[in-house]
Image (tube, rainbow over all chains, first blue to last red):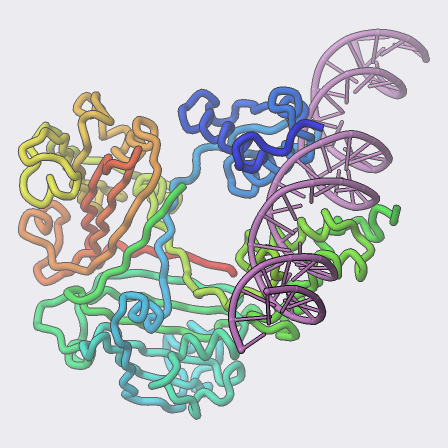
Length: 239
Length: 239
DNA sequence: TGACTATACCTGTATATACAAGTTAGGATT
DNA sequence: AATCCTAACTTGTATATACAGGTATAGTCA
């Protein structure tokens, strides 16, 4: 029955902004109660569905906690975890406006030994596919990718042309990704790594270890070495 | 008019799962069209608001793209960006079951010079608060925190006891965080850094540069050095 | 042929209403 | 005093309806 909107802005957004501003200024502290749907109906003159949408979306965004039968409350302050994106190297380069070139060092079937077999949870000497690729940005090497793949999940891995698509791109199509783990370290490169990345002596590497799971088993393990002087990861974050 | 539900499961979730399953099996490829709200009304026998909620939530989750007047489509495959968390060091240590100790090296007012003034966007020689803290895990140094703070936003910064709370914890309370940027690099430490972190010669550092914004201005800049041999960042990700 | 228009369809938002189910507090009963 | 029950309030879901505004296409008119 009330009008549709007063200033060309959706009503549920007005309600959301009002709540967010009260939380942002500290007027409504963490764990304190916020107006119920019916309170908002009265104070804003909107329908309950509109109030519900505002509160529900704020819950989905982690700002509020709602308990049926009890009420709606300001969520505890965010764990303050800032996401940093770990992305496909080719996309990353293209987005920067650079040109990507992949140099295939080797692509073969190997036998898992030692820690590698343990990583995959397979028997020692089981077959694994292994690719070694150096990724270039504007013809400067910026990533050495040592990748190991479970043959069952990517049977035609050895026939792929990895100068055209990255293993990463191929794998997310071949083996639906369920989970990924990343570990980030600063390390000194070994001789082979330093040579392939054309690094100076004494220059460190940013190392990303990536493991991806499919159907509960590790589908792929990647070791990504980046020259410290030519590569950095960055991310922006808005709470 | 139709019944409420058939199997104790919300109808909008049924619709969502149906769509997700069609996308998951590849039946509906990326960029292909998905049924309109009215199609879903007919095929599922639900109201348009219910169909709308299912499609809208899938859009919010990045699964679908909706264009008013045109239709609803399967979103292009996710950019495959894996978040890596950049967290408060004290929380991180405690969560691992270790004990955290902060060693205050210095806490003073300085004058911004050179790049620092540029970072903050303030005039050279403007005052800045500066704290230098070494964070220990089980009495081993794992982070050197060089932090610069805008005095206006944290007037009592110099009176804080940073052996009890981290600057990070203090700042998120004093200056509501609006945006944060992180840059990650592998670098060789300078002499001071190597000494404070008790590192061996030739050992690299994982360097995190963090800038946080409040009300459009940079509130704080932090340089976080970690010994490569004793520190790593990791994150898990489920799509 | 080119420009305009009417139409059909789509999403976006908003409302009034309804019923289910969880929680809490207070009152009645035993 | 302990227990049960009810009333009031909360969120969660679902519907029918309405209007606004975006987009594309077919058809009309100049």
